[in-house]
Image (tube, rainbow, N blue to C red; front, top):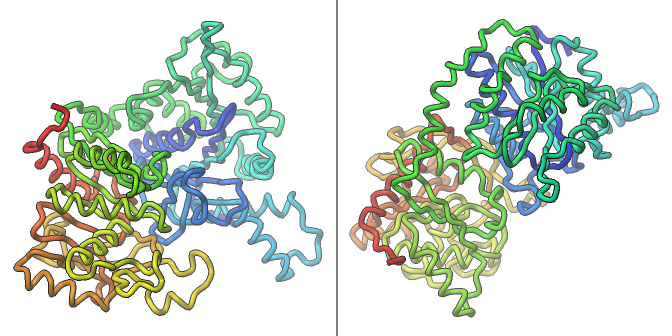
Length: 558
């Protein structure tokens, strides 16, 4: 596939161990290049056989990030969008499942004219084709390609071969490789060890790929002698060995890379026609400075069932940090497990004790019944104590269920958890019930929403027409819409109001409790659109309300 605009490619691989920050490294390099005025896109390659991330266990894979066009993707696309301040298409996440499905479909259609379909060239050609489709979406100057996993993984081999071929197809001056490795420190020896990085680089070179930059992750900074040793044994320029020790915030990484002249190395290596001026990161430095504020502190509790792995709520966490930095406070985020046994007095006492310490309560999304009753208890506590309450997706549904239970419908529930419930205030739309495939019944991607003026929601957005991203299967049941709003009217503003709907007024998108200081629930996922330089208005309004609550908060620690 020919491109009108010459695009350069930066390919990021990982070595030694997984989860060393390839995604943050990729996003940070993209942020640097964006600051130079370049048009940058990013691709994440996941070598697993799943077609997408939609059915992956959050405990194993973290959050599912949803793009505007409704693709359920790897969480690294969230990093890319936040750092680059762009909206990426779903095709930016390539998986083995997508590649093989496409090749098999072509084979069944006779596209290969009877040829024996093989990994090389058919699979590798398909991988390159998918990369080029993304590159053709716009006049991109640079496309970053992150290969998930670790060099040496069996499932990564076809992708490494395809990326090696891509360099030959595009020309070596237009493709460069960045290898991210880990430098362990052995307490017993009292020194850092470079052998894992040497072996990882050797493994990469064995498939025909020589890294142009080696990014060395470490818990503490490494010295210049160690960098020189790595450069010598791994056959890269000394200036191209970069150390990124653990930082106070992940948003510091672009600054660390720029201090190590990574921008200049990339510009020189790819022949980019820009001036690599570090002063262009001034706005980013200001953001990082705001993110490192230590006082005043606003304590926000995320009450969910995947709290053992923070990455399961990574976009929510980052959105809270963005909002707090913009307001000028520090968000101290507390993760509270909603999977609590109501018959265990000690567990319940601990659960409520944690809630008492908070200035704001956020109920995130999720699927399945486990942990829901804990979310409902947290909603009830926030209503009783007038603590700012933010419900997202299932969190909004929990607010509706609990409100109904408090106002004449004690058995109210979602049909997701109780199919025979007498009052399913949350239910699946009739047209969705006919679809059987997992994911097929879901509302995914960006949808329009109209905001009702005179509400706290409108105060946050300051506009009536918005777009937000969805990922859910069940909706506010319209059969209960009038009666739940009637409670609001009859009780003189003590109840629920609908502050946002679909443009045709059919689907309820946002609800709020007008007699509460701040209690808003939204059916969509606003966390997917928050940026460090542009916090999402609902998160900003929520954190601001929590900050206001903190000023008059009774401190249980005294």
